[in-house]
Image 1 (cartoon, rainbow, N blue to C red):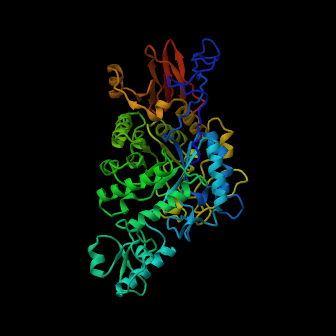
Image 2 (image 1 turned 30 degrees about the vertical axis):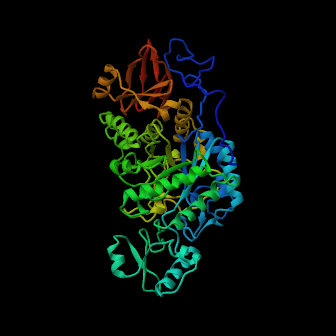
Image 3 (image 1 turned 180 degrees about the vertical axis):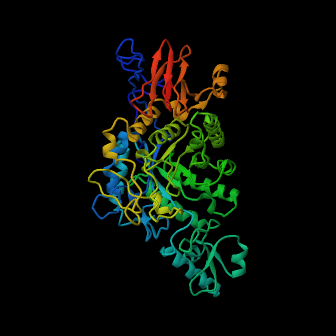
Length: 551
């Protein structure tokens, strides 16, 4: 019935590690030099939902027709590029018809916004992505719609008729139940939610984000039927979407976690009805405890906000250049995995609602934080532009960043045009510290090529993304707890494959590590390719901020 998921495996999946080519070696091609040379590795991509996702803010990514607005065909044109870098999943921000540039207020869930293209464009994009082994998920804004949605007008008109004592038809009764209404100001105030008066009428509607975004009523079975119809439409064979990112899951029932979990279980069942391996990731902007409660649902993943931003465990583990905060990364990953409670963790650095943490002007730190994220267990999420070091453009010149500053156009550095929300980037005199994607691909030492190599390692060693943390031997545990240097050791296992990851958190100092018996160095990620790792007499020397993979 449904389009089969495309397996992206290279020959038979080998879970004992990536297979080196016959010419692969841990030693320098120049005898006596000691320079470590990566083993030639073959990717082993597993067809599951532990993916390397790429969030695309559609409006700003790639414009195919010169109107300065990103579109679906523009994304389609870049599928090969995304595959080359190593992404195996795409999350598209809302594409439904809407007056806003962000589209989080859908006027029509069954129509692609004309500025983004057509349904045929979406079909072609999804088919092209599947050919490349890339899954595609849409942004499912299922807690509210636009107040310009024809459903909302039909709903409040039916509600007005009911309040007047008139008999409603079955269709009118269904529409009346689709949104949350309050019949008096007192009832609205007592709800604990945000509300707005229906224009020229004596009743109110719930609108927790904005007056233009009325909330759906999940006490109504008709609401579930309506959402099911949307999910079915996009997951059907004709389009073939693989799942959804669920927007603001706390707002189905504001402040009522147990009821929200019930809604989420229903949504997961709707997705599974279409595809057994259909994927859902939810946005619950909370700390560990709040997210853990939502993992009581059947939803596959929730974004792990404690990993994100400048205060997240990824960035804060790099807070001291001597590497003394390294255990923040180890403990952060442990909490990340434990918090998911057997589901798929979803670590990330930033998204469309947050100031960017990547800064091209600090290439070493930007590379390290990308590498640290990409070595985590789970489905990792990269916000478009992080892989080239894009920073937030504070166009207004004030210290208050706006959402539009986090959603500026992607720098292709080629003939591709993209839209800049507001004024041109850095209009207040800021400097652009990074080259565009086209130029970076040609530069071995670029941020983009660092991202590409780190994702190749993820795609090569399934245990990096899927592995459970193993207890460390006594020597490794002591090394982790010591502040004598910046070395951190992490062991993971997935099925029969074990990997050991070595992280040098020191910006200034190299570290030495004696390879234990049965562990071989496979690859080293360097923030500066002019530095070299050394391997002499089983002692691996890692330059500053280097990451090594052993197997």
